[in-house]
Image (cartoon, rainbow, N blue to C red; front, top):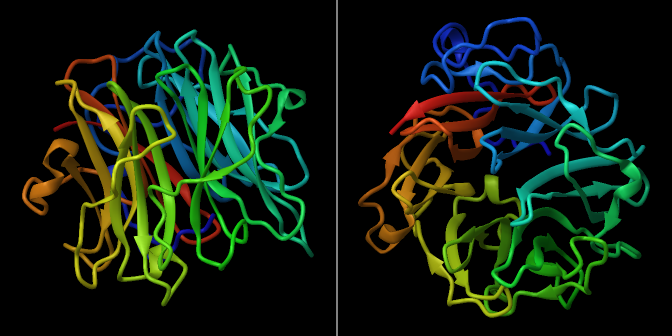
Length: 363
């Protein structure tokens, strides 16, 4: 997806060279550098002149860091996964999808049994451009079988199911929250959910998140996380003057929680800024066990900046909002195996030639 409303050509300059956590290196014979060393931003998708976007970042149970993303390096948009055990040496991206249609917006998790699950959306070619959500699973981040793909939503007719996000519920089900239009009366974007009780082999009929959706607004760009005793959902709400949230100055970040993935608390408007674009929310667990919300905002700069806010402090916003040392959009962050060091991934570059950039940092 081309999110070029801001930072379409972010100049990382010298920050992309040198420093700890340097350029990815898949060379098998190199001695590993100190693990997860904080330093300058680095290019995570070298040698790819095509579009690379939509990162999803995971810290696996064994400490491996994995980044799923879409890339047009193979001609059309497909999903890839790259991994590292030390923060310096990165695997060559493993290709997940091989379909002739375009695949976007992956969301990668590991369940309590150790199995990896990934969801994304597939857009059909012209003239229909129908979009539907797909899902797959594996025990090996380097080996994905296209034959294992499952359709998580039915895309017959003019439907647009996209930007899915995935988590495991406290009850052990897989839950995908996604955005759709035309599934009910009206044309506003709404959040829907589908669940799987058999590890992703089959998925239930999509259900609108009635506790969350606003009938008079667009609800978009969800991010779902398994947090402590339940689930936390962050997303963007904007008015109907522009259905594109990253181009709508009414866009605000909202938050809701659920103990079971069925019933949700009343949405909390986190940002409530006038004439400020707040988009691309993500959630991550800090080293102290608390959760933080990261997103892109134009509150401080018209070109956008990546900021952070403790979830426990959302009622006091903007107090507690801090800048993160990341440049670009679609920020995704995880705590690394090295105490106090986080890993963040963003997207930057001219439309059609975007790249992923990674950075190890302390905060």
